[in-house]
Length: 445
Ligand code: HEC
Image (cartoon, rainbow, N blue to C red; front, side):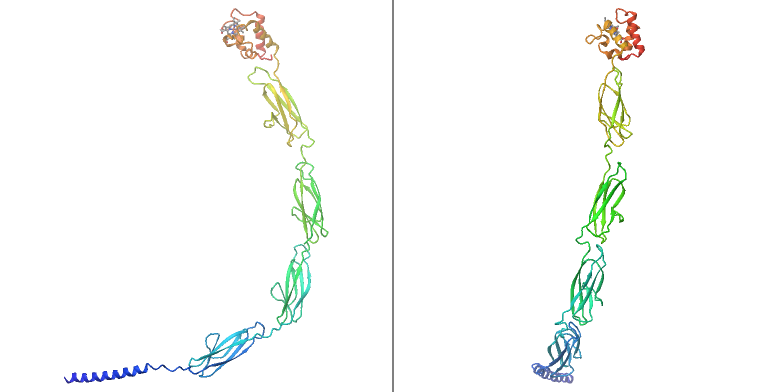
């Protein structure tokens, strides 16, 4: 029991203590901590130093703070704080310097780093000089020799290139150039120079005559070219070949040629020439002599022919009949009655006047004529166009020729039976048939 009592007493004491402590804590929270910067004003004094040159970046600012606290640190344009109030490497411009003491209290000021006075103010740098144009068309041996004035210790730049100690610029093509001169103080001036191509405005005119090859396909044509409009002496080139001092070109075949003339200054002009082959047919007259063989009628195939012989052109000739294809052979065979046009063409393609040749039928021969009379007198009553016994009509000449063997068989040999049916003709009449057959039995026999 005593133990329980004792615990109860201690618990009450502890509770009293907590209540007291709580009351004290409540009273402390109603009192804010003191502001260490209250009433403190940090002043910053800053001394600028300009860059040594216009556009330079070696300006500086030296700052020092005062007004409370100690262990100041410094910042420029919101940068990190540093122990030193010295800032270097500055270009001209406005800067904000802040200072902070060991309690974190800050102050700031704005300071201007002024640009140094411009040494070129009132200074005019003048560039003058001379030019030398390129000596040949398209050449690159032009030059500029420039000199600056209005300052000292000049260096020179061509077209904003690197500055060099001399104002001489060589190996220049025609064109416009800007030379800038810079004095040792950095003051600049510039001038424009123009180099002119010696061929600008120069027109080289090429003239001349050409002579065609004297034979078709020959190579004895020539060109004789001349030039004007530039400075002599000229040189000449054929079809972009090597230049030569003469404008004469020989040994030329038919074709198109270009002659280029070049003046002493290298200015060029050109002209085209065309050489043509002579007409191989000019003055050539081709004649055709035709040897005609007339046709033998009633033959199985026509026997007429024309054999042509051309002259007056270049051999070999070819020949055409009735505008057909040209052939190397000069003979046209198996021709019937008709008119034929023969054309000859020589080795150069020259054609002669066409000649019209008639092929006629040969006349009937005497043996045939005698047989025909025999048939008229002894046979035609039964063998004509109206009554053609056995299919035979002897009033048509070629029927006689075609069936000669049958005629002989019936009228001479009585095989298989005699014609005319009443009996064989007298021996003299039959002999005429035999003689004709023996001679060949043709229309012309
Ligand atoms: C009176 C009428 C008559 C006379 C004239 C006559 N013929 Fe005929 N010929 C005929 C008759 C009909 C036939 C058909 C029957 C035959 O083939 O025997 C014929 C058939 C032919 C035939 C065809 C048969 C064969 O062998 O291929 C030949 C050829 C012919 N005669 C040749 C002659 C000759 C040639 C003569 C005159 C020399 C001639 N005839 C005179 C009546 C005649």
